[in-house]
Image 1 (tube, one colour):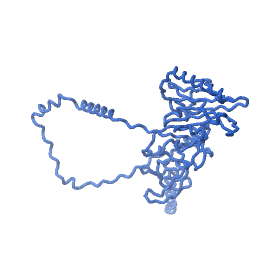
Image 2 (cartoon, helix red, strand yellow):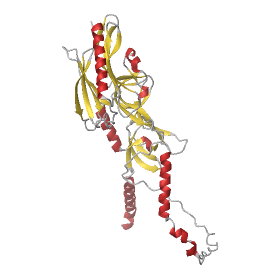
Image 3 (spheres, helix red, strand yellow):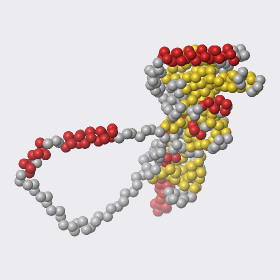
Image 4 (cartoon, one colour):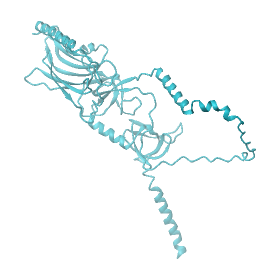
Length: 425
């Protein structure tokens, strides 16, 4: 009987061993998600290797093995291959990306922009971050936010992938013992110090210690480093945009063209128009229908969103745009809010968020009656928690002579009133 059951028992043992070994294979040592829009899955790590599959952004992967920055993965369709770990996102990163997209898709628009050429949308405001989608040429997007980020040239580090099991360490190379070592003659004993070594070393003993010499060397190195001018940080303007199919991502601002009419955009004077808003329709019998406009501009890449804003109104007598109000040297942040027009009122209310000298936010509310602009209120403002638009702390602004500023504002308003009575119908 024992001999009869022996083959059956052996088969059962082998089946259990195979089941136990295969239980960890489907799970692997971790999981990840595809970051770019398209990612080739290679059969091996050889230079000329076949592409076994093309992965899409957000595809779920199981990590099977790790070799330096490359990982072997298995897709949900049981296709295995090798990819660069810098093109992958961990589960936490993917969840954060989904949560940010849900929050940012509902942000108010700061204006529409045209895209003339195909443009990549990045996960983060960084040239080397994954481009998860592409905006087609000759399309329009909504601008939601702005960020000035340092221009990066170094390759990104490996993704912060979470492993459920530690990857297997690389096999150690066996080192063969050199048999010739034992045949070499032994090293001779060290020579004895001279009899007068204490007397000969008295100057060194009474002089500065090794710690003093090290400290002096560090101080000299710090002085030399202070003399060397540091490299300036090059900033790039990035814009958070939303496409018509509700995709939200970062693009370089210089590739966007704000869709404000050309007869207003010509007054930008080389500055970047960061946002614009319609302040009402004006009917001109000669030029047709025109609109009054509010815009914000930025003179250079900076941590805040704009440093100037300007109101344009359409002069129906001269048939051209003229400036109703402008303000410079601001530390302005998004969002800029324009209240909806009331049916029985000509006035339009709008508000801007600016930084104060005390490092706080101030929300200023203005009213525009079609020709003149007046400040209504100026109240402290606290950005909502987790707001992706006004995360940066306001910078300290240079103090401006209040009397001189008030005199300049009063003079401009008097000139504006005199011109208004001459030209207004």
